[in-house]
Length: 139
Image (cartoon, rainbow, N blue to C red; front, side, top):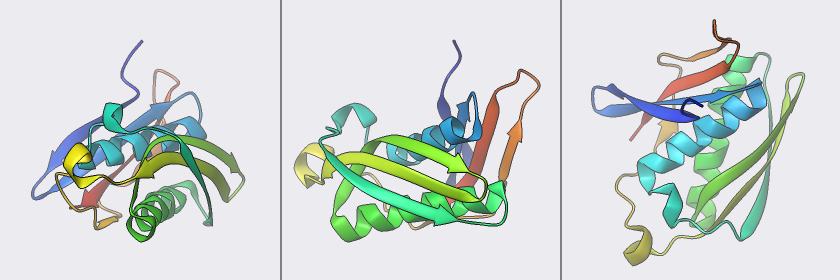
């Protein structure tokens, strides 16, 4: 099986890509890719749940809104999330983000996530049938 998420270079920022059988799985994996820019996912204990919802007129805008909502929740709650359960119904996304409070010494965050952007934004089914959800994140 191929990778569920990856990064791609973009000048001073970082591109995140999530893949999945459907848009919801691709969005969850894009959020994992984004969090992995901050801290290795295997250092995050998924013991606290935070509900996140967003709505947008199209999938591409929904991806940016979703990733920005994850950044907002991590920043305002001083948490890191390592796992995501995402459901997309029409233009509405409902998700549970699972993580824990940031412990600076243990997690050693490497950058500050500033925001998901519309740069290289793409949500689409690929030739292999899997969905791709990608954009560039300001760090």
